[in-house]
Amino acid sequence: MERIRSFIAVELPPEVRAELGTLEKSLRAGKHAFVKWVDPDGIHLTLKFLGGVAPDVIPGIVKAMTGVIQPVSPFELRMGGLGVFPNWNRPQVVWVGLEGDLDRLAALQQGLEQALSPLGFTPESRAFKAHLTLGRLRERASPVDRQEFAAWARTVEFKGGLSFDIESVNLMKSQLTPGGAIYTPLACVKLGET
Image 1 (spheres, one colour):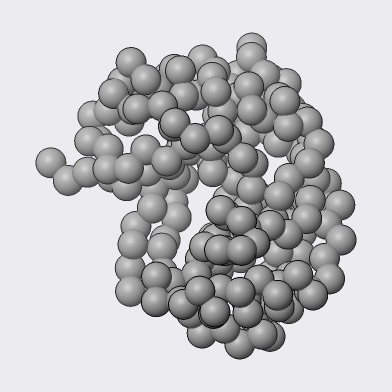
Image 2 (cartoon, one colour):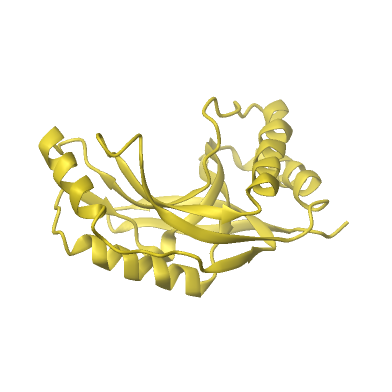
């Protein structure tokens, strides 16, 4: 039985993706060939990566998601500033942070971790950090490359502040292709439908 590469995420509204695209364009102007950029149309707020899932497990995942998500009322987030993992001295991932009702978002994410654990999904050991990934620096990027990129990225002006409502959470299928990942929603659970 073929497994389905899956994750749980919030889809972003078009205006947020457009702003991320504008920021990415500014960052790309530095012409750092060792950065693999994410297509703005494919950027999500990922809450839980599930990996390869057997198709017969999907209904259980959706049931667990529903139990966690439906009791939560919709809430608002807004785009924050530019950041990197693990730090500016050794950037590996470049992202935009989030602000707003982060306590509610963290509670939602933790609820999903707990509800999915009995289905065999190991809870994430790292603390949840709400972010939108823009790009990843490839392994071949030298320490000097990373420093140059960090210095450039810190000069790019980005105010953030655009707000958006969290009204639903999706179970997504991720299909890797030579042209990039293709994302397909498998299920959508709306907040506040108790």
